[in-house]
Length: 342
Image (tube, rainbow, N blue to C red; front, side, top):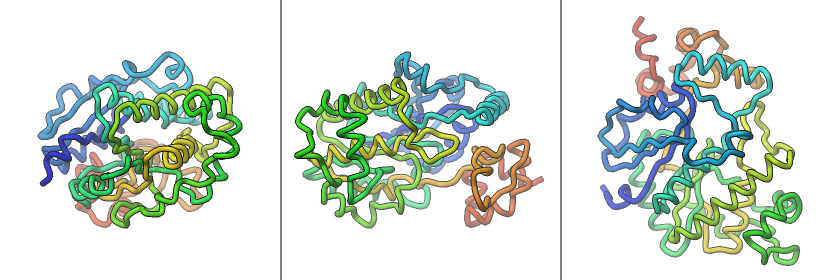
């Protein structure tokens, strides 16, 4: 095993809510002891007594973000699992959307700790499950000999006209602040051709899941990227910009990723590639058991229930089928084994 690659690489989760944290804890047994895992949450006490064989770092989310983010990117600060889910469900019914962009504060943590190789992931990301993460790290390292890498949920398109009105229009003032040389004449009409070189074993179809990774050489370049992303987000909220998200219950950040990857692959020494083998992104039942995402699906796989336990009971067969077997379901869904043994 290439221990040096694990030593310099960090898997960073940004999570709120005990049950979302517990679904990550459930997968801890698969994580190799050489790995560095960071969990950034507004309820760090939940992880106080968790013991791991790998290097687990817990950080308070609120220590990393400013007041404007707390105001506009509101997340619940509730430690009790049932209370959290009841309140969250009520908020969703009233039109609340979860701010997935707070994942960028994992990047801020990395910069503060002088880390330039990392991946920001949500609760569905499993480390060393199905694929050995070390092989993905080896491939990324080989691919990054001459370039910085941006990988994961990269909003990839060979025709970058999609981001033109964002770069030169709505967000032009922020773009000019960091990249004053960009104008109509040298606008990046496409994400640089190097993106076409995505390796098969580094590509996951559709870049599924909120997974955004960086393999950079210079900390300063990564810091500029974060500051740019932070200012884009603040401008977005404080100027009531339209939501580019297609989701009914989260505010995603793919359109900002498109702006970032467009600029960094066109003007800087960067490639875009996939992330397969770094993590495996899998479905988790946390959003479905109270119907948040189920009601927006034309052909839902599962039946809505009032509680998480009932969801596991009622949808037992469907969950086993979805996870390709009972063992996988037991491995990945906390509480499922107990329900199954009733």
